[in-house]
Amino acid sequence: MKFDIYDFTSFNQYIDSFLYNNLPPLWAMIVEMVLISVVFLIMYAVVGLFLVYWERKFCGFIQNRVGPNRVGPYGIIQTVADLLKLLVKEMVPIKKADKLLFTLAPFIVIVCTFMTLAALPVSKGLHALDFNIGVFYIMAISSMSVIGVLLAGWSSNNKYSLIGAMRSGAMIVSYELSVGLSLVTMCVLAGSMQLSVIVEGQRDGWFIFTGHIPAFIAFIVFLIAGTAETNRGPFDLAEAESELTAGFHTEYSGFKFAFFYLAEYMNLFLISAVAATVFWGGWMPFHISGLVNFNEVMDFIPPFVWFFGKTFVVLCFIMLFKWTFPRLRIDQLLRLEWKYLLPINLVNILLMALVVLMGWHFGK
Amino acid sequence: MKSIYQYFAGMFKGIWSLLVGMSVTTSYLFRPWTIVVQQYPENRKGGRGRSHKKLEMFDRFKGELIMPHNEANEHKCTACGICEINCPNGTITVISDQELVDGKKKRFLDKHIYRLGMCSFCGLCVKTCPSKALSFIPTFEHSVFDRTKLTKVLNMPDSKLMKGVE
Image (tube, rainbow over all chains, first blue to last red; front, side, top):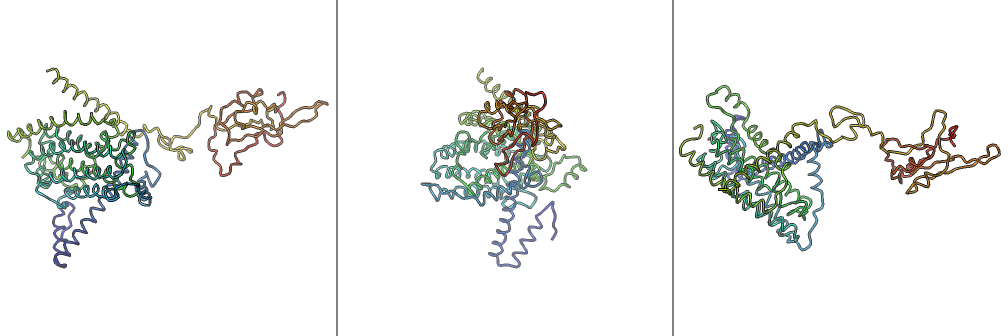
């Protein structure tokens, strides 16, 4: 067995064969599932806690403030303290709420983020689900989380929640189109929907460089539509504080609220991770074909560092949107999608098809 | 044709204005020394960085009412009671006493009581005092565990009226 931080394939195969040699197949499968779920839970918790902290620090700097700075050095344990507070808080029961749906809604939202997380290629070999329709799977699952939002709004027995949920529904249904089409544009360039193939295809240059103009347009569209899909930033109509108190999670408290909160930040992470994977090469290091020494230096940085680094940069961009732009009205929101993003996207797909057909793209 | 021009012109104008906004926020993001927030308990002593600048109150900050005394333990209060009359919320009580000077009765200050917890810092007492016996100092850390500690006697024990103040 060889433990290699550049390629986890042999390490994973070693664990797999070890389990299947020593346990009956059913038990081996169960143990593997538990192991993977524990890994994802840890990743989920760490990423979620870090993002909440980083967002507060980030917006503090933008607004000439300091941000959290009391709990631990530079306030890094602040979110742990917040989480502990949310864990021990009372879950207020709502009169005349639909009890089952009210309890179910946060779980739907959080399960969707978990399922999307499983499809992300973190490093070579660190990839739980590698479907041949990986991009399609991510699009399908991430748009499912709107069901949780709608259920939360409906079951709360509160008109503000319902309005927030309906807005969220209208928004996600329309912006899902742009997310999908911009990803399809990149699938045209990659020639595959399998995420591992997409990442491998960027060995000699990330798609944002090899696909030049159409890839860049697709990236901008994806960034805008992805921000809308996470219910964040200038598109946070679903929880417009000034109009709807807190939108669909007005009535939620304690741990159920923590679920929504965590899922929001995980969605942010997932959208940035998908953008980093499809446009910026995922875990693939930065390569310039021809410069052998430079490429070897870049290969020296472990792939998961590349993945998380790229995700972090995209994520900071989305955070910058949130803390710069004012919130859109619902009609402005839908106009932006249907009159600007969608036509641009459709033309962009044609352009990308032309580029691929004529071989005008770089690399390969 | 014009509508097509308007469509693209509006789009690029919008993108430009968004980029301008983002350049402002990004410039602040990468300049942490522009932070204006003062970090309170740390900045009492002063330290590195702008947010740890030594905390100093302004000259005219009304922190607490005092009665200045000179080295000979003398104040300027004649116990006329104008401050007590002018105080809008009964913060000041002037307790005076009388003594015989050259066969004439003369009033002198026994206790000038000031209740910090009730004071609204309007400054009327300082403004109306005919002999300028009162003034504000810029202290601000006034929290105590017992409310009675907020009631203060402003004149020092055994203090006298300054010569020449009537």
